[in-house]
Image 1 (cartoon, one colour):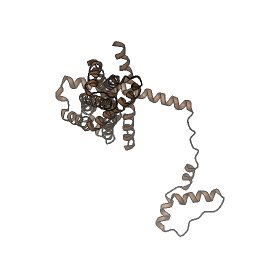
Image 2 (cartoon, rainbow, N blue to C red; image 1 turned 120 degrees about the vertical axis):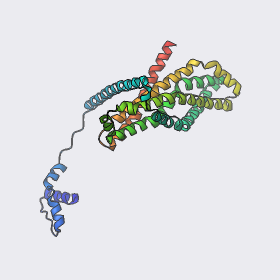
Image 3 (cartoon, one colour; image 1 turned 135 degrees about the horizontal axis):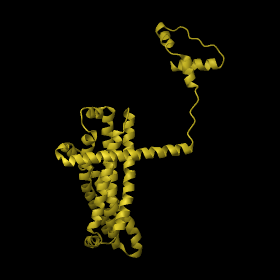
Image 4 (cartoon, rainbow, N blue to C red; image 1 turned 180 degrees about the vertical axis):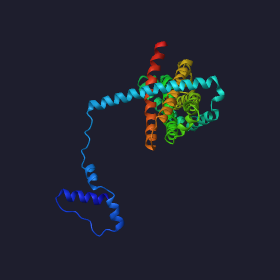
Length: 313
């Protein structure tokens, strides 16, 4: 039908006569239901002009401010729900919390372990290539140990958690939002944030520090293997140098950062899920936005905490 109307429009534009003949009654009746003139008007309408660069920048800034405001509001709602759950722990859905701990923690062990181990190998190799020039191979243990414990261990762990669990939280809650299940919870008198977000936030808060310790161990193991295999170091010498360098506060910094990242990832994933509207496409957008926003905020929080730790120490 679209082809027929398009041929009619082209023919009339060329100043020639257009006529259909030999049609059955059913087809002719179907064609009479459509106003070809309105279709022509729609097809020949002017294309909207693209926005100017200044307007695009302004729109992006307004969108960023709206996201920041929505995040602050959601943080307030989640804090209130968490406080209520701590006051009355029986209201927490502990079975769901354990389920999300398994998904975010145990199921992530192979991926986190492999990435952390390879990261330790790469970091140890790169540092040895430079330190060998000065005969300071032993200091590769210092570089690998401090880098993994303070920065790379918690950072890479939570980036992977954001990609796995943050996106999953957004997709699950977003699907419930589109299917009006969240509205049904509200109608029945349940707080959606307390019912859906609190178990997920608690799960990440409990499991990410353990994942961070696991990531630190495998990162240090990767550096040890490279140091022994390529740096002419013994296992005992490498471990002794690491023991001299690493302090308890270095491990504490990584755990504090990991806990902060976990809260950010859980909050962003749940918030984006609640922001889904209309159809399935919005769920995909919420999922993508949860990962991007989560990783961005992880980097921002990392910079802030690093400066704070450096200043106070």
